[in-house]
Length: 206
Image 1 (cartoon, rainbow, N blue to C red):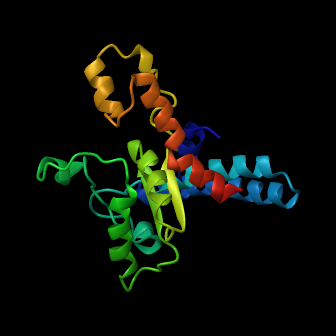
Image 2 (image 1 turned 135 degrees about the vertical axis):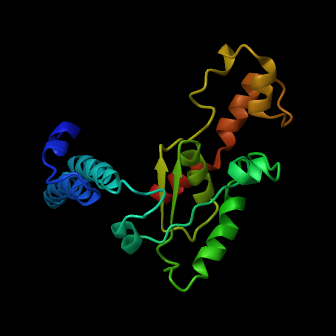
């Protein structure tokens, strides 16, 4: 179903009509997914669940700013975090990006799990863009997370990067970090071989 068709199905122009039209589409895909799952068609079910997730996510348009949509207030407790290399920690404190994001996530989970309005068994970590990679890395070292939403999921920062084509050696050296490897290719091979994310995914899904 196209976005234009969903827009034409809206019964008004307010946020409520926007939500209802998009979520109705999500519900239809959920129904299809459950039917496919009942028939043992896992790939088809996965496809429909993915589509449903996209439509349901879009339905909650007023995520940032005020007023906050009442559906979001009832549905989630949301804790937004700026870590090293992001926002105030970078600008105000000079904290640069680190790869081991489990170090950042662990104290956040400590604080969130201690809140009386949070179920510690249902904590979800969501990361967007580079955060999709960092969220997966964080989950590899934080077992208290019930789920991870990686948007998009990036298994490795180096696996799809054409390192040999980068024209600025200083940029390449900064990106790959001086960890004792002899050359750029060795740095890439070591990074790929030692990535904990793939190991964690393999252990979790096997």
